[in-house]
Length: 235
Image (tube, rainbow, N blue to C red):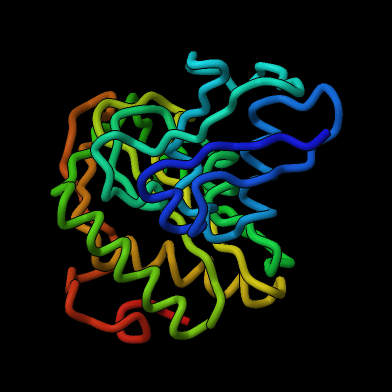
């Protein structure tokens, strides 16, 4: 089936159109619609992770089935200006969401790194963790890392998000996704992303142990956020 999708604000600007046509199979969901929009219109992909879909003037959940005749609109965030690929958030993180943000027709490989809260470190039992960040600067440094990666691996698409607040064992603290044309590039760029994040992004964690607690930083030796990747990461 072919559907007409209305676009507004930054989405319309990126597509250079006020509406687009999407071809979807019968019984397709809103989630399928968003995936298809990102693949068929790559310029829209970086914004879709923070967009909502309205169907017949009502906000639609991801599992809503779309049918011919629906009036469908893609709605960007009202505040605008935010890049959904990079964020500090108190909300639970999703690797699938970041994969959607970087997926594009030119990518043959998407690497994801998911950092979780582990229970034991050097034999010491962690009860929980609390993360704190200087959020505006952290987001800017994430964007810097993305620019560095795109310079080293042209065409790479990067997304990274870090959670703050109180996290329990096994909860996700950080997710990084890197899409490249080939798998070797994705492995290399993915490692660069997470190591560089630990090196220059202002995020701290407080480990609560059975017998006490302590604030920690990146734990990669003396902290020097002015260092280059090669200076700060052991081979």
